[in-house]
Image (cartoon, rainbow, N blue to C red; front, top):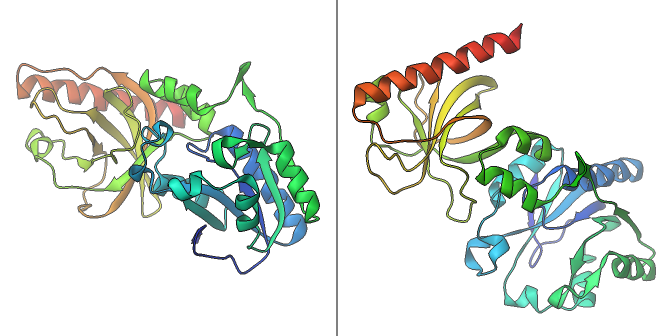
Length: 306
């Protein structure tokens, strides 16, 4: 189980190799940094640690206001990647005003045996320090610092901006290639309007955190994993124009599942954009469309299993 340690107040009490960055969506470029840190950690018989930020909602910095993965979602994905520790910091005025030397000194209070970062890593007040400067600081402490070069996909540098642009266009298939796994939304299943139940399509409803990037509204082919079992799903992401609600929801119909999920954490993985969300003239029209959507994902599942 991954452990979360506060940068400001905590110290990791065992040798670690640390991967430095924001890791705001943990795309394949970020994963390359983490995998290199994992390789060195194995070589050094050390634990694997990743640095990131939390408490994003308490800042006014734009990069924190439309994150692909929230802090808790990043921790969830890092756990799947085999990370032992997350060293998290608050991006507040105190952190923003730390000089590069102050940040480095504070960082190495931990028992760090090696550091890994990306070629474009910056740190310190006004991001005045870069990967080359980090290597110089590490040399003064006889620390190894490995810089990982950029990762490209189909001739384009993989970046958070590339991921975001694809998400707002609903291209979740492409996003899965950039992230190394499908894009997902995690949250506690909330009480809904129970409209889906009356239609014969009861849904598990998640309200995404306010800091999370708003993806293209519409209906998606998705899946969830409950107690180790994977279920195919239909997810409507948006504000339900048929019923005139303004709250953005991820409403997920889980095929073949009948348990109670209220109050439980659920992660919904997005595989394919199916259609635009629209206002239907009646519930019977909506029910007919949902049956067509369900038939599509069922047939698609059969095709993929052949």
